Image 1 (cartoon, rainbow, N blue to C red):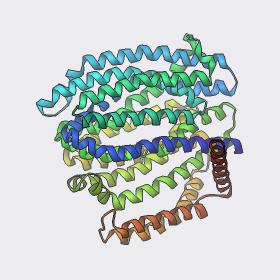
Image 2: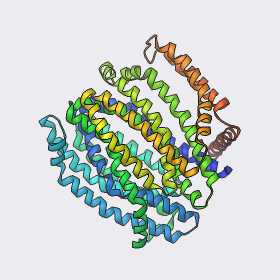
Image 3: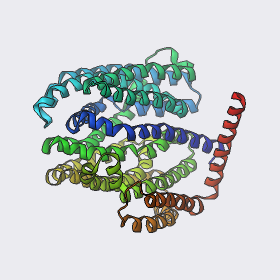
Image 4: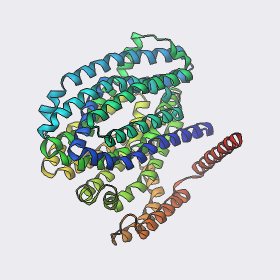
Length: 514
């Protein structure tokens, strides 16, 4: 793998971690306050608003992924006019579909609440108003997705994450401030919509600055049909993905008290936030997979694929161990003992499910980059058909813990199916790759378990000196083990070069400012 490509990938992945990590850091400190100020039931309504609007992602028609793929390929061949056509064709299509989605969500808000949601009568009016306000933001999010897709295709994740950090921070600060001054849910959602609108102009400014060819609008009907052919299968994925991610929440809110949704949603949100681990890597690799597949560089893609699975596992397993052994103490400190009692087991099951989700993501990204969205669509339809009855029965009989077990089941199944499909695309030795991954992660895992397991038996609070010492010790042992036995010489060299370049950059910055 080329040195310049390695450095660029590491740089962009680092920016993704910084951007997403900052927002998780803010969420950690603001969520308890938001839950307390809204109360459990109203926070559940807040969750349901985003869930209902998320179901309309099917109207994206898969064109965001299509635009990134096509723009990446056109940039590789220096076809700027085709880049402009792909960009603006998607923009015009999304204005139409976004407006349609907004009208549907707004018009049927009352029906959604009355027909599908089980909640106190005094909250239904607030829920209807919140959904109507949130529907306006649906159009803005659609347009923003295409514009920032151009920056993704350019591999300008540094710019992308600076914008995400700025607006994400504003959104959380506005939420906390509005609650502090006595405003409620509808005001919070209205402020989010305003920020989404302003977001469009910032993304537009930087996209045109990086690609001046985008300044002049155009439309290409034949190209739209070609992109819809690719995106059509992605749109099937867009139908099944919200079902896979949200159906258990709908079942919980319908079959159980709305408070049970909060006990499930917050652990599930923490695990979903950990999706920054694969997304930080794979958002970078998707345009790279597309570009090198176009140039028939299969060896580069094979190496990127195998390394991405290995490195994602290194990072996630460390976090998973912490959640399994100290998740309950974490919830006690963060939100309270009652919440910890109701949510810890849910968190434990979801943490294991998250591992399978994380290491399956390189396979789905590879399939999209290789122009095989139909395979991804088939797998998602199959898993959705299986998941719906499993999830319903599990939630009906066991509540939040049943929902988490259903998610673990479907995560393992999805990992198996996606791995087989990726093997068919690359024809790598899957047994050899799996054994190599297990060999590299085993020393760090064993050493961590030997420290965590006896420490947990003492039931120390999270901020107890012995707990802190154990976590610090495991962190050191784990990552030293990864450095010695998990990484090869190539990876260690690239990491050293990246940090040396970063240090030199900061030295130069300090010298100029000094």
